[in-house]
Length: 222
Ligand SMILES: [Fe+2]
Image (cartoon, rainbow, N blue to C red):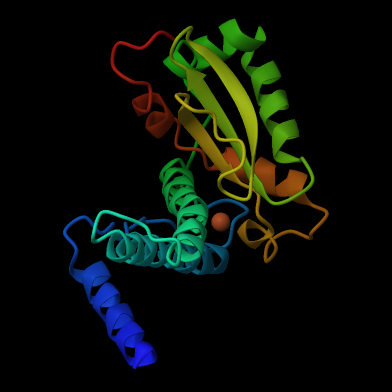
């Protein structure tokens, strides 16, 4: 009987996840024809991203279900704790993929001299090339994760950080401006496992700097 009730609740949560007005949609990205990153890699990567959206919505629905009465019983606590911990992984996986796809485009070019990003890079790192060198070296850290250039809105400085998996190392309150996925699935079809540097060069050939500029919050310093 317990099994049957719990199965019914699971079914409800799936329905809730797909009809919930707060459910996150799978965003569409018109990515193809990039330099050094094959269409096949992009196709598989976009499919993988959809999985993060699905899992985020499912976790939200399951947590809502457990918390329906406004309390978490001691019996529910292990499941609730696990769901909450997994949510950080899935949610950041969804959002970071969206940011990284968004800051790519076919026919990327160098950033415009005098743009907000270049100006912030020069004031934070002395030159754009020094900023780029730091970002590339973050991207080459061993392990799976992300290289992210953030804006510290309090002082307008750029700051490059490593994020382990999807959720370890994001800086609270910092604004992600440029996001690079360095999980192996992002490049293994196009470059060897030891060729992450080649993949990062390809990334820079496809950066949508206009998108990066739009990420500066209105009225922020930098
Ligand atoms: Fe990825």
